[in-house]
Length: 155
Figure 1 (cartoon, rainbow, N blue to C red):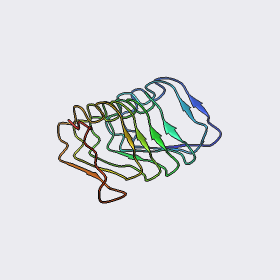
Figure 2: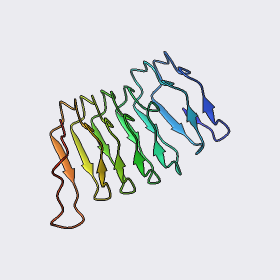
Figure 3: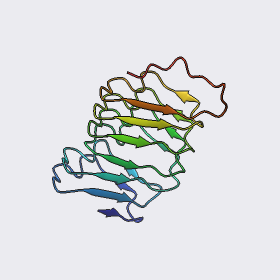
Figure 4: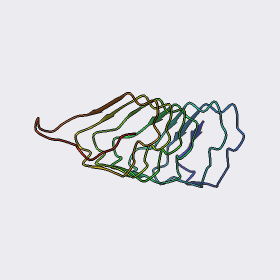
Protein backbone atom coordinates (compact mmCIF):
# COMPACT_ATOMS: atom_id res chain seq x y z
CA UNK A 1 0.00 0.00 0.00
CA UNK A 2 1.28 3.44 -0.93
CA UNK A 3 0.13 6.34 1.21
CA UNK A 4 0.45 9.33 -1.17
CA UNK A 5 1.89 12.74 -0.35
CA UNK A 6 -1.64 14.18 -0.26
CA UNK A 7 -2.36 12.23 2.96
CA UNK A 8 -0.86 13.93 6.00
CA UNK A 9 -2.73 12.23 8.85
CA UNK A 10 -4.34 8.87 9.54
CA UNK A 11 -6.45 8.40 12.65
CA UNK A 12 -6.05 5.75 15.31
CA UNK A 13 -6.72 2.10 14.46
CA UNK A 14 -7.41 3.04 10.83
CA UNK A 15 -6.02 -0.23 9.46
CA UNK A 16 -7.26 -2.38 12.34
CA UNK A 17 -8.05 -5.88 11.14
CA UNK A 18 -6.50 -5.53 7.65
CA UNK A 19 -5.12 -9.05 7.84
CA UNK A 20 -3.82 -9.24 4.25
CA UNK A 21 -1.93 -5.93 4.31
CA UNK A 22 1.76 -6.70 3.67
CA UNK A 23 3.63 -3.44 2.96
CA UNK A 24 3.16 0.25 3.72
CA UNK A 25 5.04 3.00 1.87
CA UNK A 26 4.50 6.44 3.43
CA UNK A 27 5.46 9.24 1.03
CA UNK A 28 4.43 12.42 2.89
CA UNK A 29 7.30 13.78 5.00
CA UNK A 30 4.78 15.55 7.25
CA UNK A 31 2.85 12.32 7.96
CA UNK A 32 1.35 12.00 11.44
CA UNK A 33 -0.09 8.71 12.59
CA UNK A 34 -2.71 8.18 15.23
CA UNK A 35 -1.94 5.79 18.06
CA UNK A 36 -1.85 2.18 16.95
CA UNK A 37 -2.93 2.72 13.33
CA UNK A 38 -1.50 -0.67 12.39
CA UNK A 39 -3.17 -2.93 14.94
CA UNK A 40 -3.35 -6.72 14.55
CA UNK A 41 -2.05 -7.08 11.00
CA UNK A 42 -0.31 -10.47 11.20
CA UNK A 43 1.11 -10.37 7.63
CA UNK A 44 2.46 -6.79 7.58
CA UNK A 45 6.08 -7.34 6.50
CA UNK A 46 7.61 -3.90 6.06
CA UNK A 47 7.02 -0.20 6.55
CA UNK A 48 9.02 2.31 4.52
CA UNK A 49 9.34 5.53 6.50
CA UNK A 50 9.45 8.71 4.38
CA UNK A 51 12.63 10.65 3.70
CA UNK A 52 13.27 13.91 5.61
CA UNK A 53 11.72 12.67 8.88
CA UNK A 54 14.15 13.51 11.71
CA UNK A 55 12.77 11.38 14.56
CA UNK A 56 10.62 8.32 15.02
CA UNK A 57 8.42 9.08 17.99
CA UNK A 58 6.90 7.01 20.77
CA UNK A 59 3.80 5.00 19.82
CA UNK A 60 4.16 5.56 16.07
CA UNK A 61 5.61 2.10 15.55
CA UNK A 62 5.38 0.60 19.03
CA UNK A 63 3.99 -2.95 19.27
CA UNK A 64 3.75 -3.61 15.56
CA UNK A 65 4.00 -7.24 14.48
CA UNK A 66 6.37 -6.52 11.60
CA UNK A 67 9.59 -7.99 10.27
CA UNK A 68 11.35 -4.98 8.74
CA UNK A 69 11.49 -1.22 9.00
CA UNK A 70 13.18 0.71 6.22
CA UNK A 71 14.63 3.74 7.96
CA UNK A 72 15.69 6.75 5.86
CA UNK A 73 19.08 8.35 6.36
CA UNK A 74 17.42 11.57 7.51
CA UNK A 75 16.53 10.03 10.90
CA UNK A 76 18.74 11.36 13.71
CA UNK A 77 16.93 9.99 16.77
CA UNK A 78 14.95 6.89 17.70
CA UNK A 79 12.89 8.13 20.66
CA UNK A 80 11.79 6.34 23.84
CA UNK A 81 9.82 3.13 23.22
CA UNK A 82 9.54 3.70 19.46
CA UNK A 83 10.05 0.01 18.54
CA UNK A 84 9.00 -1.37 21.93
CA UNK A 85 7.07 -4.62 21.66
CA UNK A 86 7.76 -5.25 17.96
CA UNK A 87 7.97 -8.98 18.62
CA UNK A 88 8.53 -10.05 14.98
CA UNK A 89 11.47 -7.70 14.35
CA UNK A 90 14.50 -9.93 13.67
CA UNK A 91 17.25 -7.51 12.68
CA UNK A 92 17.62 -3.79 12.44
CA UNK A 93 19.92 -1.51 10.49
CA UNK A 94 20.47 1.82 12.22
CA UNK A 95 21.51 4.52 9.72
CA UNK A 96 24.76 6.36 10.42
CA UNK A 97 22.76 9.59 10.75
CA UNK A 98 21.26 8.38 14.06
CA UNK A 99 22.95 9.77 17.17
CA UNK A 100 20.53 8.66 19.91
CA UNK A 101 18.58 5.54 20.88
CA UNK A 102 15.89 6.37 23.43
CA UNK A 103 15.05 4.50 26.61
CA UNK A 104 13.24 1.19 26.03
CA UNK A 105 13.69 1.79 22.28
CA UNK A 106 13.75 -1.95 21.45
CA UNK A 107 12.18 -3.17 24.71
CA UNK A 108 10.48 -6.55 24.32
CA UNK A 109 11.60 -7.14 20.72
CA UNK A 110 11.85 -10.84 21.54
CA UNK A 111 12.74 -11.97 17.99
CA UNK A 112 15.54 -9.42 17.52
CA UNK A 113 18.69 -11.46 16.87
CA UNK A 114 21.24 -8.91 15.76
CA UNK A 115 21.79 -5.19 15.61
CA UNK A 116 24.61 -2.97 14.38
CA UNK A 117 24.99 0.34 16.22
CA UNK A 118 26.97 2.88 14.19
CA UNK A 119 29.72 5.00 15.70
CA UNK A 120 27.47 8.06 15.35
CA UNK A 121 25.26 6.82 18.22
CA UNK A 122 26.54 8.55 21.34
CA UNK A 123 23.48 8.07 23.58
CA UNK A 124 21.84 4.73 24.36
CA UNK A 125 18.88 5.17 26.71
CA UNK A 126 18.00 3.12 29.77
CA UNK A 127 17.08 -0.50 29.14
CA UNK A 128 17.17 0.08 25.40
CA UNK A 129 17.39 -3.67 24.65
CA UNK A 130 15.65 -5.09 27.73
CA UNK A 131 13.54 -8.13 26.93
CA UNK A 132 15.35 -8.86 23.65
CA UNK A 133 15.65 -12.52 24.61
CA UNK A 134 16.88 -13.69 21.17
CA UNK A 135 19.58 -11.03 20.84
CA UNK A 136 22.88 -12.81 20.14
CA UNK A 137 24.85 -10.18 18.22
CA UNK A 138 25.33 -6.51 19.08
CA UNK A 139 28.00 -4.70 17.11
CA UNK A 140 28.95 -1.13 18.00
CA UNK A 141 31.23 0.36 15.41
CA UNK A 142 33.90 2.55 16.92
CA UNK A 143 35.16 5.96 15.82
CA UNK A 144 38.54 5.30 17.36
CA UNK A 145 40.14 2.10 18.59
CA UNK A 146 40.16 3.32 22.22
CA UNK A 147 36.42 4.15 22.44
CA UNK A 148 34.46 2.14 25.02
CA UNK A 149 30.82 1.64 25.97
CA UNK A 150 30.71 0.22 29.48
CA UNK A 151 27.38 1.39 30.92
CA UNK A 152 24.83 -0.10 28.53
CA UNK A 153 22.90 -3.10 29.80
CA UNK A 154 21.70 -4.93 26.70
CA UNK A 155 19.33 -7.57 28.09
